[in-house]
Picture 1 (cartoon, helix red, strand yellow):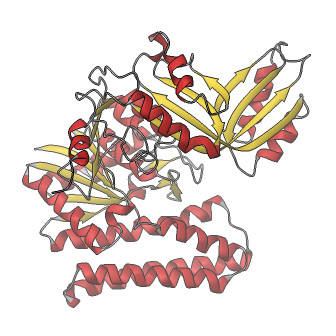
Picture 2: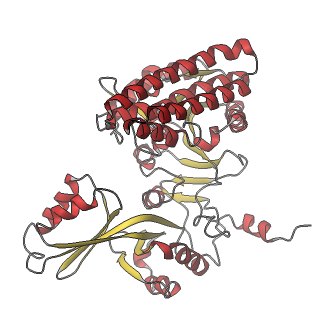
Picture 3: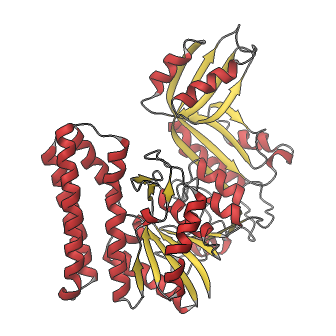
Length: 474
């Protein structure tokens, strides 16, 4: 039998019906002779609510923080009772849920007293989402006849101490997976653990950053040399663009690791940007699937995707960006000037998405955040600085973009009615990116999709689904 890692996102475990669907999907894999290892997110929206509770407590609003916790306790208890209907079987689970929330409440009370929310405490508070959801999922699996066994992800996913965005220690994870997961799999059990959460070598809780459950699944898949890593979400796979913006978006059947990584980094929310890395190292296929439509083939991410006759495979958008302009006519060409600029961004741990230089200026794009004034203040010691927000980065991904004559002209002709602020193409063979006003992003995507996906390659895109959708209802 072959091992497969199955990661289920928050919408796949959001309520009793979703968890039951997830159980049926896992049972189906077992029936096919697969050996699943399951990674689950917190119930949908729970991480956001835990962060709100933490913020309220840190602001001294103890009553508000505990009220949020009380609502979450009730939601988890109700979910557990709906899934495990036998009171004798559900009683230990309810007791465990209450113990977890009692512990969380103590942390919130302490936080309200000291009114200082550190990254370490934040990680501990948000970890409760996955720690509780994984227990509920195990109980639900058992009621569906799946021999599930719970594992605390913090005993396996070991990281450094960079709270809120910890860096995994691959060699330790591989060793822990062999010690703790492999024996359960060999016994015919289905291990279930929470994603996103981890711990440093001292056992202190850390997290992998928002969306990190995908990353957990990939780390486990890589550590165990899985046959495949399945990312179960609420869409049919990677699409040619956001279907909420462009209703005629198409499912991409297959895409390369490199293309998927570019899309993930530049705003395609279906994948966490780091997900691909462990899979690339071990050449493990990643499948993006829909837990609400499990019969759909989804998107297969592989090292070498089939050739596509269309110039682009997908359009991603990254919003809430800012452009920083650094102008210093005397300094720009001097030795070490660019290094000085990037040292400042490194100091503030602020990643840069795009860079453009001219004779007298450097323009950079970054996520809009509260560090911008401090970054600008440091940069102003080198040059004149100005920045403006509400920008969006459009990223178009495809094969050998650099080698296609006239492709840039086609792109900018399609959006000739929209002002373009910055352009980047030469750095990548598979990515063309440009910066526009955030308010123009949706219109730009629709115009580009209409121009480049009017004759989609059926080998790469799900054209049949488009044809079926176009047929009149009978």
